[in-house]
Amino acid sequence: MTTAPATFLVGYGGKRYTLDAASALPTVANMEPETKRRVLALVLDAGAAGVDLGIGTAWRSLAQQEATFFARTTPDSAGSLVYKGQRYRLLPGMAPIAVPGNSWHELGAAVDFLNYTAPITWAEANCAAYGLRSFAHLSSGAERWHFQRQDLTTARNRVASVPPPAYVWKLPNAASNPPAYTDWPTMVTNTAKPLVQLGARGPAVTYMQEVLTACGAQPGPIDGNAGTVTITCLIAFQRYVGLEADGRCGRLTWAVLDAWVRYFLGIGAKP
Ligand SMILES: [Zn+2]
Image (cartoon, rainbow, N blue to C red; front, side):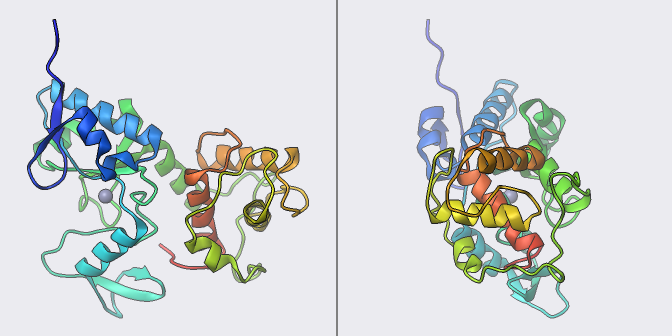
């Protein structure tokens, strides 16, 4: 006895895909693996319950997020959205979108569900069981279809609002503790950073050590060598921000480190 493969809507073309076919589409394939597992489980279980959520957008590159942002907003000195030092306001009739670098879509850790009327109510009621939460980036209720990792949302809120433990972290003050490394902006925009784990050597390790040091942590000497002290510090950082504490600085950890550089060290966009 076989069961017909579950299918669900992906994208805005109204087309239905099997699980395998949907998983191969860039918006799904490029998701952070744990987020993908959670989102697909939620969508498939919703389908089994007769609720057709659909996946509108999951992963999208920073360039795509930026292009969409510019298409929906216009420069305005009175606007409340700030990106690269310029204020923007939402164009009339446009759906809101988060400031690039602030949406988790670039990390592959968020999803916009497609059917955002009644099915969203079901998703809001059930998403916690999948480690997801609804998150409106711009204003309350304005972006109900956007769901992201519960743990990352918690991490961002914690980083933004709660003083970290003094023995590990101090939030850097951009005014009194300016970044000392002028090549950071280049590093921030270079998304092709290699995996850093115990034993790794090279400029990416140096950069990681610099960021951790500037954030008030103690990764040991900045020597481009990922030894035990550096990796122990990295694990403390991962645990603090709510990432999996595996001592491996991969795509997601790099993204969070870069967010710290942008938000707390005064480089690039601020939310
Ligand atoms: Zn979204």
